[in-house]
Length: 109
Image (cartoon, rainbow, N blue to C red; front, top):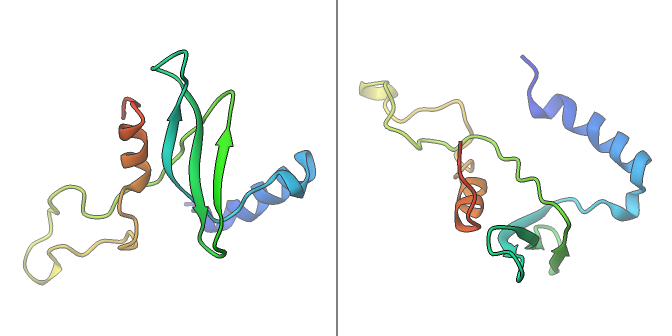
């Protein structure tokens, strides 16, 4: 099985070559989607902050794609006894992408 650790660097390098490194924002924690003032069902951008530097970002966008991974312990585990609550997901997978999408009005599938 291929996990993100394997293909993220490959995709990042291709993106940097395609649109230029100056147009790539890495390690930005998006915490709010911005609604379009003319269409309340559309997203017009996002707000986030750098996890490495004291910077905030406001992004304006024609289209927004929210891609997020799993969330640890979102559902009651099937394991019992000492294994109860153990997971192969990292504990920092807290579902923040799901939260941002739902708060922005997205239908989660």
